[in-house]
Length: 223
Image (cartoon, rainbow, N blue to C red; front, side, top):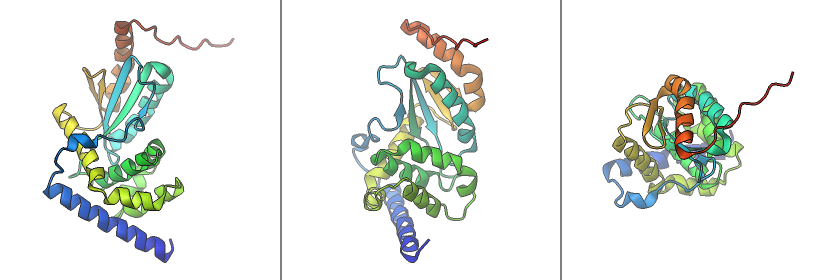
């Protein structure tokens, strides 16, 4: 990394520290107005009969383990399933989770949330053990060709951290206690990759039957 790049990373770290300090001391009033970026943290059609909401933490190993079963469900149920990601950073055990969420929210602002999401989880074993994860997040942003000025402005904007904390508070109200926690059509709750593996498909099929939708037919094997 060149000198300018190092200064930029240091500057981003200072910005995030100050923004985190401000939003921790004084909660931004009217935070309901700062809902997360619309329609970029979801996969699947808006009118899908089954809605899967994921409360997740980018530094959580159990959340990393849940990526594969979620993707399997997405592929199997395709347009019948809408998946929504919500931030639930566990700040005490996971030092970098809140800052990772802020970077992801700023990637969402530039339409690259899922790419940043995937990179964070793919390299979680590396950056999560680092003494300073910010250079990793900066590199991911650069690799995704995010506009640096827009990224800096987003990270410096208290509304960004407010959106992350708002989703965390939504999880608190929904009685989320650990990550990952999954809500299927708001009423069915699963916790962890194992429960999702064991119960997720069955519950989705039940919800499809309730809605009158036909479940996808299994792919026929070619002899």
